[in-house]
Image 1 (cartoon, rainbow, N blue to C red):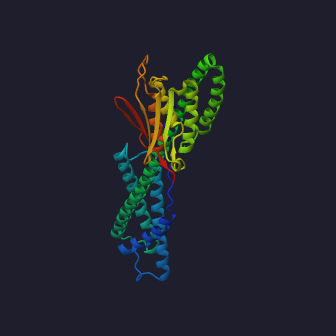
Image 2 (tube, one colour):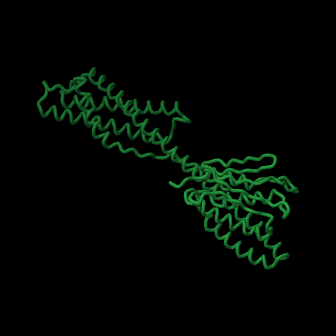
Length: 353
């Protein structure tokens, strides 16, 4: 069975729509930091000088922000938190410091050259550079948090898609096991009838065509109406009765309304009927009775045990196949109850709507 494997690929380049974030915070920092440090004082500047000064400091914030943003986005492809957390923190901090501090100081000194007559207040410059550095570290942390959230969401989606693909592949493989097993047994039966009862062989062949048509039509479906499945089981039992006459019989106790109210995986009941035929002695004097009854939201399939002497121990692949199909299709468990003289399989049903 081929199960899809997760392909290894380079680190995904996640896109973040931070335009609004930048439009608000870049002017905010460009105005607030000079006011906090007292770098721009309205008493010593004309209105135009104040406006131009703030434009310059907003430009500083723009350059610092986008420079660090570029460095951060570039370095993400080289380090990740899972495999190299210390290296990531170290490189990121060094990149922030060695870019932010020199560029901030250089641009702040440029501001003094333009607006303060070449008199540089180094105390204000150092204080402003420190505030800018702290702000950059905080913003970088916000960016990294957003990236981690996006990566986590993407990983969850990838895992869900992988699990869905694996489940679909398993289900398809299990469905494909039905056809060869069923057609093999049917051809054996037909071969037996051709030799012993040619007239019955023709009738068997016609019914076999109807039964196999149902399998082909519903193979791709995960669920079918209980009515469809019961009609298919009756058609299948006609094939058995052509071969075994009164040595096999079917007793059904299901309310008519329930047939159009519940869903069941296709071919489920036929698998149980075939399992009963395979493991029990069948004769005219001791016929096999398959009883199907519905209780609440479950189907009970029961037969008495009259074990057949098999050349080798049964692998029970049919029941295991049914269990796995049921689990993948409905997420419900098939219950098998085996006592000394009784064998019962309980199939949970899905109510429509």
